[in-house]
Image: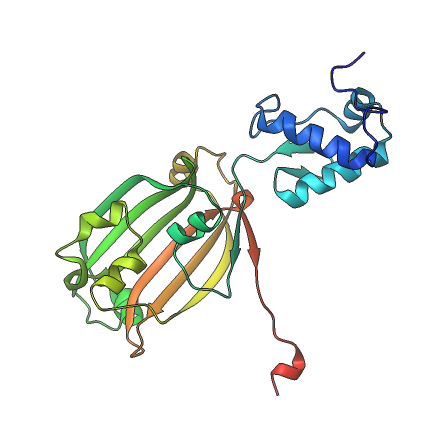
Amino acid sequence: MSDFLVANRDSRPLPIVVRESLEELIRSGHFPCGSQLPSEDALAEQFAVSRPTLREALRALAVEGLVWRRRGVGTFVARRPTLSNSLNENFGVTDLIHRQEQEPGCSHIEIQETKANEDLAKKLQVSIGDALCRIERLRTADDVPVVFSVDTVAQTLVSDSPLLLKDQSIYHLLKDIGRPIAYGIARVVSTKANRSLAERFNSALNSPLLLLEQVDYDPDDKAVLHSLEWYVEDAFDIEVYRKGPHELI
């Protein structure tokens, strides 16, 4: 008899029992992160339940972000913790991870001075050739890489405190120096991991990513920060508030 057998051992609905049993097996490492689960037929037999019952349990796990399903291939354990991010609110990656009661970290940081090209000069409202500070960081949640960010600010803003960015949110730093962020304008596009990003995230080449490009402004509508952030797709649950037609009148 299988060690996974749960039927007739719990008075609760079977999908709930199976979901909790699978979750325990995932969190204990029996099914490692990134691994493929056994087939539906095999799991249904092991748990002594019907395939519809098993599918309902798997759907619940998918909603929680513990597994993801690929049509025609199978079900896989998520590689990373899922973070819920509402695009209606403008806060940094550090705060995003804190909100999920996970420990934010930075496994890689590179800070260098650069010059504003035509594109960055326009976006940051500076002159071509002005000195900028470029900060690359690989952000982690509970030591797992989830975001690679490239932030660019005027060199004069962070000339006295660039190393503080290793352990501090850049939003907090800008607030501390008197240039708080009032709002940001962003665009989000789907993309794929090139070789460099795949190595940073320890993921497959061409694995799906979300790219967020944003310019942040201070209360005087002056551009302060330009950001490029690559998010591991299966690590984030993105929410957006959309106005109804009556709110547009």
